[in-house]
Image 1 (cartoon, rainbow, N blue to C red):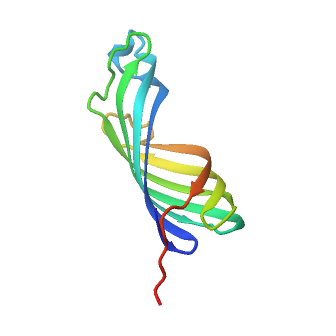
Image 2 (image 1 turned 180 degrees about the horizontal axis):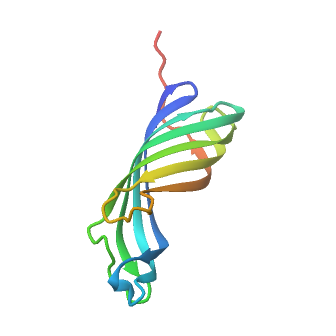
Image 3 (image 1 turned 90 degrees about the vertical axis):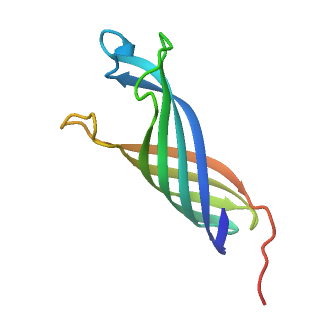
Length: 152
């Protein structure tokens, strides 16, 4: 992150997770085409954060980026599942929560994220939704490093 003023910052966030899921519509799952599986989820987001300072404060964050899904495998057979080459979805996130600053450089926070991912309509029936909503609760510690210079 790069501070834009006393209590705001622009940044870039990257995440990775290997997640359990229920996969539907792939012959690799067997006769019913439904199976327990795992997949890799990568996310890259440009972020803007407001809130900070010493003491109790509110935190508001916005994120815009892409979520990449790949490497889906069936748990029972370890067979690869579609999409074999991965899939990218546009992602928008808004977060709100609270923090407590111990100093101008150190704070703890509790934030609730609300994200929406837009998936292409290709391969979906008319009744299926092409977007997913994701809710995440984050608890963390932020520590500022480096020197801030002021102009005179």
